[in-house]
Length: 333
Image 1: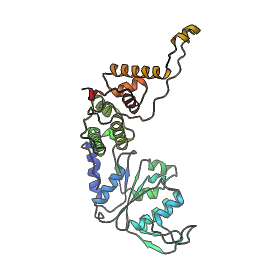
Image 2: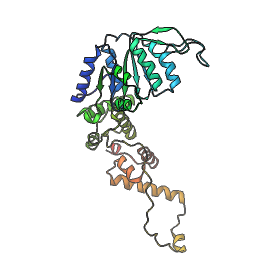
Image 3: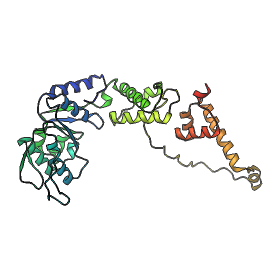
Image 4: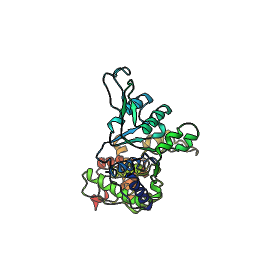
């Protein structure tokens, strides 16, 4: 069973709800925003139930077109379609005696919703291209981030299927509603990533990084938090210092708009000739090293802040420091 990290009241309420429903052999719907841990909830519903020794089979309904989703759910017989050379058991048959987890349920086409309803009501199905009825004993746990009642009101989802799937509904809370859990999860992801990367230890988060942890709303929830933490550690690298800032947005900054201020006066031809360097490449390297040193001095040798001043990425400034023989703050100290 997958580990759940957190101590907030909102999370504990959801986990208690799951524990109370696990022993009731009925279909359950898990709702919540993306990244809130709906699959983890389904996993706990299975392994806390009497079916825990049976299979836990998963299928994302949004990952396949309708015809493939049909064959993956219900199976097919030889000759059912081009390429069907032998019998194929669908996910229902493979989940016999266990639990079938249907993620992104709101994307399931209406025609398949009708077939799913029949399996739930009668516990039987027919493979595509077959005529023999196959009995199945499967508990269904479905998950969605869509408003299924609103979809049903528009005719986009079957009311009768919604009724059969919702013996009860478990709502997984968003990360912004889980007071205190953000820091616990961030520490967990950071320590694990540092260990996987071969670091000697994880030095922790700076006060500014912790402020970002608490102030950001995390629309992608736990999944987004994990990516941000791992990205931030990778960008900074193991230099013995606390993580200074979180790299929440991995996309490069937009280019600065061209200034509309008047152009400076054009210097005379003689002045231009007098300013030309005798060795252009050497002069450019010297200027690059000078600007790099100035940026590091202005930021007290904080590489991340210096990179921001120069419009560079963290990896780029590290490369320039190696090129010009400049050392980091940790090496200087």
